[in-house]
Length: 223
Image (cartoon, rainbow, N blue to C red; front, side, top):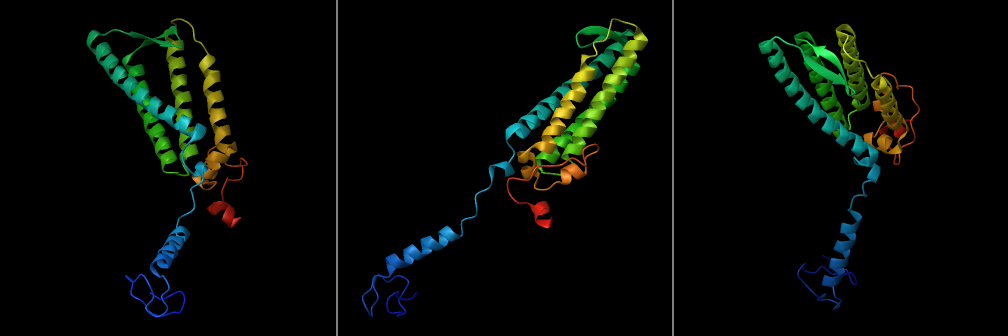
């Protein structure tokens, strides 16, 4: 290194300059600290991490995935019971005993639950990986949920047992709408994914107007 006073070459282990007597070790330490301070990366904006209501929705999706797994196991057990005892099993929809479940119904619902579980897993995975397919996977999941309700209502109608509470027909689309509204209006979501691609891949919301992100991203840089 060099003496800051006279420019004389001094040893890295030297404390004083042999030419002018200036202290050089302390000066070198200050310089190193200043350089280290310049190399520190900028802090990550909080909206670029998974948090807020988006985290709550993701946790709910994980819990739902576990519930679907338990439902599939229960349906397999019920199928075995129906097959071995040659009888129907009554199922409830919203607390009302409406279905005399046959083997056909059980098989259809097992397939539906497996498909819903797969799509829900893909949605969760897309959220964690900041994948642009996240919103589309959620839309596909809701579509499968609605179809499964349709199957249940059809079997309930065919079996003529009890009545049907149609409250779920209102709750499911309303919940879907609110989640999609959050996806298209939340600054946190827009910032977290880092681009608007999740909207562009959407089935029904591809033309929705998104808010500006909290920090610049690749999409805003191009436009």
